[in-house]
Image (cartoon, rainbow, N blue to C red; front, side, top):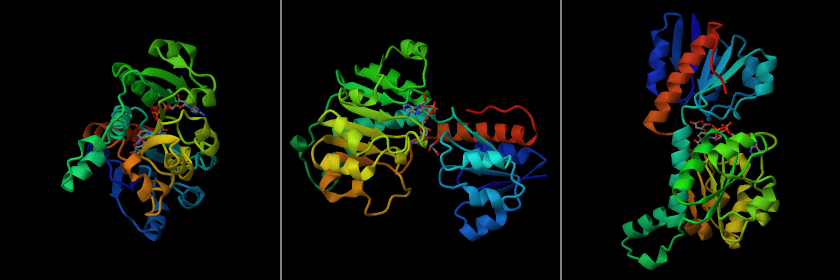
Length: 316
Ligand code: NAD
Ligand code: MLT
């Protein structure tokens, strides 16, 4: 029997497939205490998680029977990949399941900040009718810099063109052919590209190389009055430096779905009262559509069973 521990809320579609397998014993334990988690993890063959469970050295050392960690999503930055590989633990993810959900959420953030949607709604709900206070920025004719032209970045590029935006992309790891196929302009150097963009959107994984790529120094390279969108990972941006740039008027605004610490604390720099009218924040819901969650869950179930049985499985 394979004992599989599910530590976060996963769409039922894939869990149903796992339960159907006579060799699987499925334990769904959302919101466990640390103590309970460490007790259960000792005796499982596989873990299914989202971004809220840290699979660090300590967990991997305790999980003596562990063979597979299945990440129901794209980012594997919550897993110590080097240690997992040293322990012979396979890490799988669902790289394609939520691409469109994250792409659409990027535009939800972009349009919300450009047209001040939450601020207009809040004012209206408080009895206001201040049409002049909510003057926005048009996307048509503006330059969008996409940092990371992978699955999500590419889909963002296609949609940005439909809005009449000029698309620039910075990604040192993609082929010239891909850039050409997408019909975007390639930026060979980050700071020069930042100076040209009206909107900057991040779509890289969080790695030791990308951590803090938007910090006090790179923020100084931004065009004055630009907008920053982060629907990728919190650690990519120095959030205090970003809040300061908004406060000083160097950035016109920022819209984030992800935070370096999740959930963010009440005193998070982007919650500051004096910049609230220039910020839109959502609680890491970029992948939260019924379609994406169902797809991710099914991909994980299929690949997890294959990995446990020693059969070929898809992996990013
Ligand atoms: P992907 O691997 O297809 O694309 C990532 C791209 O980033 C690649 O093309 C890679 O070459 C590029 N890249 C890597 N290092 C770079 C660097 N230093 N500078 C510029 N580009 C760099 O991944 P994806 O499916 O497009 O997802 C991207 C990230 O989005 C994921 O790693 C995940 O963290 C995040 N994500 C967030 C949500 C959400 O709910 N908000 C949902 C899905 C994915
Ligand atoms: C991902 O990396 O896929 C996102 O963070 C979304 C998620 O974890 O649900």
